[in-house]
Image (cartoon, rainbow, N blue to C red; front, side):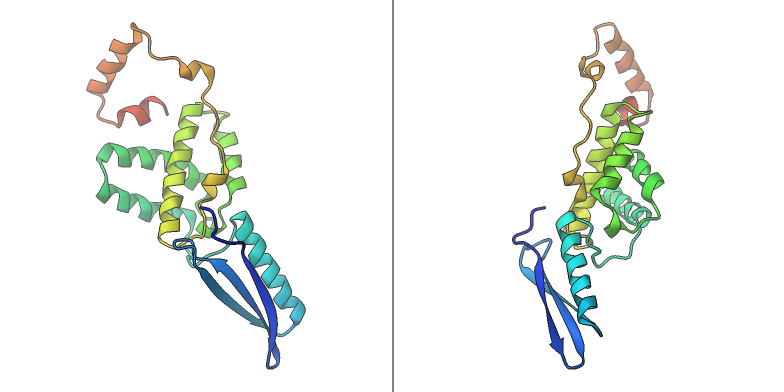
Length: 198
């Protein structure tokens, strides 16, 4: 999500303390918000303000939630299960487990684009590119909902490109393979596409 304006701020002295005032766009409306931080020393106020501005620009800003990645995905999946079809939910659950396994204990607001890039690279060593793309799609959807809820200011998955499909995965099923696939689909109660490509 693009910001409506560039984050910024100022440092002022109020009484015996120095106060840093951060100006940043609301993640949902784009309107300007303020965050104040008072400390004893001017240098500390300037340092805090600089760190906040940089974290906003890079998508690492720690927002209002204390949820871990695992806690958020658990709640997100529970909500999606109530809203969507069973197969779609099971697909989300299967794909999100990779993110939770890698970064479950990390604060949701601290998850960054590099984390996802590293995860995708690791998954590509043992998984098909199509599966990794599904992991990305699921992560993007989950973080988009977190932005909409005001839990994080930006969707860091937007800054990461999923891997391209390998050449072998671009080929459609052959006429010989199609009947076997359809027969398996009819017999298998698990979500078809998510299972087939995982």
